[in-house]
Length: 323
Image (tube, rainbow, N blue to C red; front, top):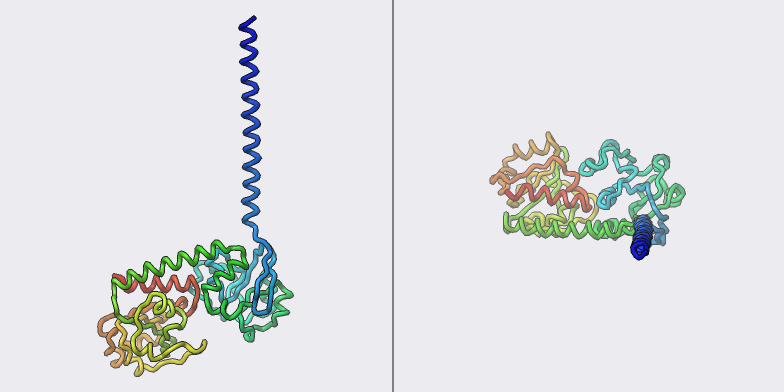
């Protein structure tokens, strides 16, 4: 009898233990489900209201189809692929084509019918809208339209931050900017060790015309103001870039360029390459005499400003100057 009681006690103890385990597992499953739901909710973007050049704009939640012509650099830096990419005819931003080759083009002046055909949820426009075919109100009827402030348009760092807020990717924006600063610091140290105080210049050859970059023109801002590379006297003489238009410089004037290194940005077979090779005055410059004229066939990242453009420019410089 005693053994039977002991058996029953043991049996009920085991059953109760199993029930406790099952209950605990059930609770854990519920907890896991709740956690998953919380994580799922945290990935969904919320509605946000921001200042713009047109006043306050409320961006709807969970934007999926974004259009930001000519500023696809910032979208890609945040992991967002646009529904259409900026183009002038067949000309696109080549340095972005690795990510955008399958994305359809939209003409630079944003014809309303083309915009409508891409069915955007959000349109991001430049501060000066004079070049667009449509007016703000017309684009805003197609989709929520955000017009950048001048600061956001001209400062790509600020643009990354703003786009991060618009698209619910503020953490991605912070990481992208932090990673970029690390890249700049590392490259700056490497270049200082490799070339010391030597001077660097960049020339863009288009046909048989030559354009010398001022210190703050497009990605030259990276060369001089972020990497801290030294400007030759002729670049200092140019001063600040005054506007979007720039004037060509003659080969005779280029003969005064006393740079130790010159990046010559020119498509393969461009007439300007042959012109310089056959110019006695150009061949007498320090960079030409020392074999330090470095030809780069893709100028697209150098003629733009953006996080990805700047990163590629840094890669071009490091690869070329650090042996």
